[in-house]
Length: 203
Image (cartoon, rainbow, N blue to C red; front, side, top):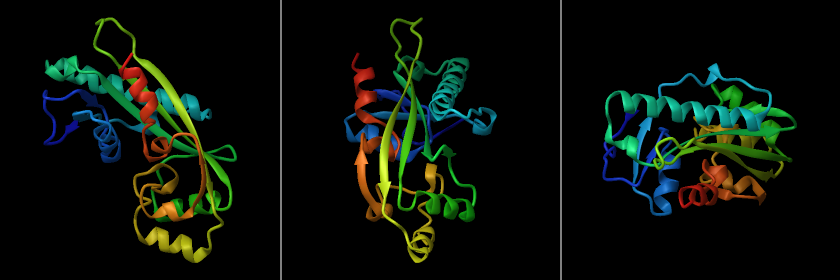
C-alpha cells in the first residue's frame, strides 16, 4: 500500500490511486486530496466488456484500499473515497496501458485516422450512512484522431508520454495536436470524469 507526502486527514477526499493526473483533476475543482494507492495486480480481473472491466477494477481498487486503512485504524476511512480505472476501446479492441514502446506504437497505429472511446470506471464510497454501498458507474468519451504519419508516431513515442496511460497517449500533453474532435467529457480522457464525480460526491 502506497501513499505520499500529501497524505493527511486534513483533506476532503481520499483518492485510492497513485495517478498524479487524477489527483490534479480533483484539486483543480477544489478538493483537498489524500492519496492511498493499492498494491493490486490489474491483470487479476479480466472481461471482454470494457464497461464491466473498468467498473470491476475501480471497485476492487477501492475495496483493497479501504480494507487496508480499516485494518490499521486510519482516520481517512471517514473521508469520501474514490477509485477509477480507464481503458481505450477501438473497433472492439480494449487498450489498457502499454507495457513496451512496441505496444504503444501498435496502439497509435490503431487510433490513427479514426474515432475511439475512452471509458473510465468510477467507484465512490461515501462515509454516511456507514452501511452505504459504493456507487459504481462509468463515463464514455468519443475521441477522433487525425491520420498520423510514421514520423509523427515515432516522434510521439520519443516523448515517453505513452508510458503508464491507457491507449498510449496523453491528451493533456503533446498528443493534443493529433485530436480532431471530442464528444463527451474532456476530463474523462485525462483520467476522471469530473462532473460525474462531483455529482455523486455532492449527492
